[in-house]
Length: 286
Image (cartoon, rainbow, N blue to C red; front, top):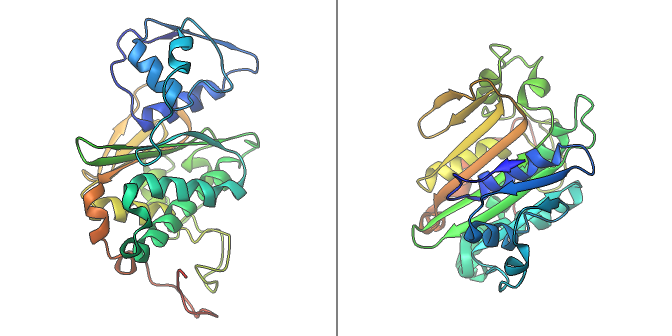
């Protein structure tokens, strides 16, 4: 039973977190929503929120008759279950982030690095979420460009085991707490799944820079990340930690927000970390 009487607005982060939470319910469970505004029902339907859910209590007939969403303003909620979906999903996110100008030649030099960073983030989510016996974990992704504010918001949320479980024995984990695990995960290469002598563009395993690169991109575009895991969450612009007060999120939830107009000004090469060791091929994004 979901009480939506005080729900006035939901962005891609809330959308993905709520859907991932409902995914953890027993199979065949019916979800009943109460007192949700029709405009929110319409938005959730447009963003494909109700796919795969046994839902009651909502007028979905009106929502089903809506015109399809604008491809350059949002990416509907996507459930990612296979690493093969990462590249295609990241491409959709980048397109929504950059808008209708995404195909212009002048955007090409930094489109691919951004896409790479997001692909790393998706790969991280898929690989780390399924540790500790969480083999059925999924990743939920959504994105929207809020045109009036000029901001882009995207989310990557999994219902896996969380940062603390995956980093429990890592040297960079100072305390065995969820808050410390989030801080450690934001350090370059902490979540790396491969050795240093592999090129960025020729190996599918992650370099452990997806989260840090995404945080750098957000900051460079006057934005921030919100990262939640376990009973803690962190706002990167404030570098402030917060407690979820009596509850625990079983998984990792990441929200990215930035000003879209600032994306063309980002020098991706300056943000990339130095590669340790000697590479067999020159780093490039061709």
